[in-house]
Amino acid sequence: MHGKDTTKKIEELLFDSSKLYFDENVGGTGLPEGVEICLQPTRDKEHGDLACNLAMRLARSAKRPPAEIASGIVAVLKKSVRSSGLAPVIDRVEAKGGFINFSFSAQYYGGLLKDIYGTGRDFGRSDIGCGKKVNLEFVSANPTGPLTIAHGRQAAIGDTLSRILKFTGHAVTNEYYLNDAGRQINMLGRSVQVRYMNLHGRNEPMPEDGYMGDYITEIAERVRDRKKDTLLEDNEENGNYFREYAVKHMMALIEKDLEDFGVEFDEWTSQEKLEARGEVPVTLDMLRDRGYVFEKDGAVWFKTTELGDDKDRVVVKSDGSYTYLAPDIAYHRDKYARGYELLIDLLGPDHHGYIKRMKAAVRAMGRAEDSLKILIVQLVTLMRGDEALSMSTRKGEFLSLREILDELGKDVTRFFFLSRKLDSHLDFDIELAKKESSDNPVFYIQYAHARICSIHKFCSGKGPGYGIEGADTELLTAKEEGLLVRKLAEFPLAVKASAEALEPNRLIVYLNELARVFHSFYTECRVVNEEDPELTRARLFLVECARIVLANGLGLLNITLPERM
Image (tube, rainbow, N blue to C red; front, side):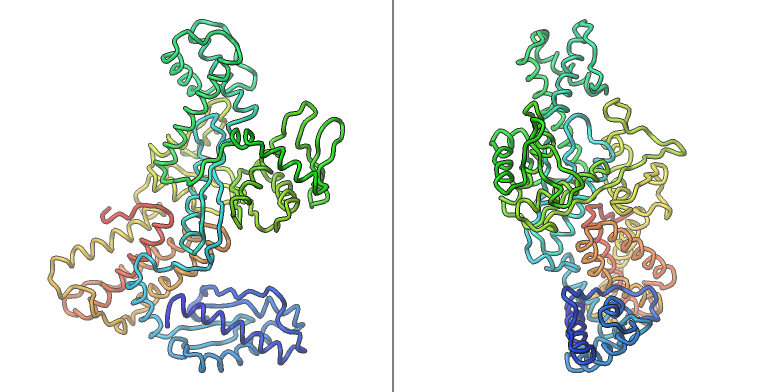
């Protein structure tokens, strides 16, 4: 038994042993409801391989010191390990400072390497999601301009999170909500119309909130080339044409940028079509029937104060137009109607106030509040040397995602966008991203994969004696070998932690550590030793397992696996 099977078995034994300890020693109160077993890799090998802080989390309810609880649970655990079949793979179980620590045996690690090699691209895959239907909405940029680097960060995070969730057994749909209705879209059409008139010598002023970028003029030039001077009359029909053409043009650019960034969407949902189907009034009637809608001062209000918000919200203005909240509630109701069990929205930092409103809407629909997760993705400051570059879309003074992709490429751009927690501000250093050295983390990780491929290529020309079949893993006794094997064992836990926390950057942290451990191993342990063919075979097997894990990790990030650098 090894890999995820061992981890799952340990979690089960730990839960059962804790329950038995509580039943026999803590007044028969039993374990508190909702207790979860969380195993984490230890930072210090002296403390074992895996640790659990369960005793610390139980101390308050048990009214006993964590160290006492940990010792009591370990006493029960040791008996369970002996009778469970885990004894050959668990070398030691001990309580240390309130933690419960597990150390694996050489037999476990030998089996783990065989598991990595045997499962290949599926190593680290799990079914913890149990097929749960997840709707993951991200980017959803208004088609009023090219994608910015802020949108790019959302795209990288959303796409990677989707890959991780699918890898852990979730049924994920990637969705883009197209805001193709409302004031901003009308202003986009008007801005293009004004530039079209300017191109024909008309001195039409740009509206105060109009879009000023060069891309507006480019769209106007396309319209002029297609329609000549036939749209100069300022009427509703021509205005509709400019709006529809501008949205269609911008969406084509957005889709191309996303495609080149390695991001795919399963669904593109149009706000205009949602409203045309009458989903908004149906949703408002549903809220009204449940007592959450009232009228005041000629407007229609959503009674969100009864559902955890700090004040009630207008959903229909006194002029009869919807606020942004009304179609958004209808959109989320539509997601639930399509059978999704978990909704995940990735939004920008200007949407913090949106969270309480949408949580209130979810509760008003009779859904569990935790069935909606709203993740705030912080902004990016793009640095070129000591200069911070401007990011104003409306003024047209910004560096687009396309420009970054053209300068740095997909791999580097994705990696840097993923390198920090999504709710942390990101300083993106373009000069560092260009470096091909160990200072550049994506280069450092990719180089580990390329280095292994070079080793295999070197050995492939030296005959069958330099293969990996029949490798004896018991020969891997050097300290650096042990550290590398131990780090490989942590990959399934890193993937699981990323999925459960909805934090793709945890995988970046893991891959950085794996690359560091591998490069250290490569420096200290000569892989190909003609005087010791059996050790060579064992080390070739080890580095191939490292290559598989690196490939799986980089694959989840959708980053290229170079064979030479």
